[in-house]
Image 1 (cartoon, rainbow, N blue to C red):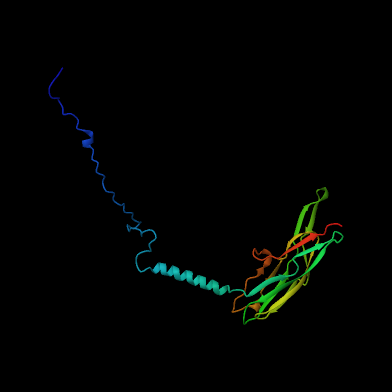
Image 2: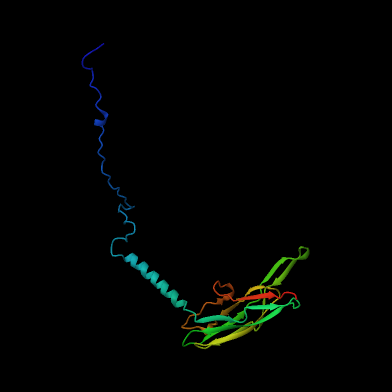
Length: 213
């Protein structure tokens, strides 16, 4: 056995050798292609803001020109007539009178329009013997196309009839209004108003079958 001091110094304490001081984190500088740091997120480019001002002017002029091309249409539409009818099984169809009222909300200028009642929409289904049968939901009767001049703060009516051949609920919105070239106001033409594709205008007619006695 050997006694005395060891040949080499013993290993220092590991806890004493470890430095617990955490170095401070330094931000990493990101540079662009030309070596210039990009602007901070959400900040405008440095300088006089000429590019941003040009974008604002361009958007403002585009919005103004759009509003100038599309003025507010003064036409208001409503439909008058019964909302619920009954017919007997002995009658093959039922005819209901209705009136389309077209009003002009403008205070000064008359409004020239063309009213058009659209044709019926065909539907098909499998009948007896798997034969395909065609039918119609309802059909307009009367004048289907009419040129009207609605006075300022006035209204005009178009008298029609609705013919149905079975019980059900019918949306009487299948018509449209056109604005002829000579009916422009302030040099701008209104967009056609197709009520058959509107999601806000509807006039429901409930047709019920009378029970047998």
